[in-house]
Length: 191
Image (cartoon, rainbow, N blue to C red; front, side):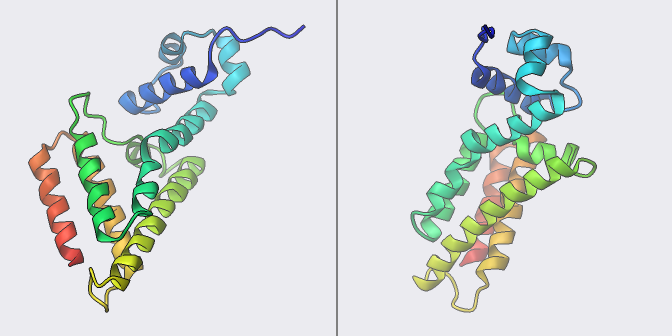
């Protein structure tokens, strides 16, 4: 008879995601992961494979629970939805919890240059956000909220760059005023 797991894999994944988010991939040791997840080595390898596989699962989980809302908001309207995404993003980035920035942005800087699997995931996640911005901008253009000669694809890329730039600035400890200024200029450029 197979043994049942004496831990909840999804909860353990969430704990690992949080540790990777706070410390980064390289700085999060196996001992720290096992202790934080409250599981043994055998359970870890039997459930998650290895540290790298766990990290990839943590990236997927982060996108699911922390960033997928962006696409949902951007489905609602044009310019108003874009403004909402930036407002909520800044609110989250300056929350009283430890300034962690964004696991996706942090991982893009730490691992993507030498880890093709991480780079591929980050590329897919960012592309989905870019597509959602482009759709919202296309609606904004049709509604006359932005210039008729604007390029929604190019503007979407600009907004993605701004969004991830905010996340890096927040991780570096910049205050709300700096983030708000960047958002104000970015949104002003759309008009």
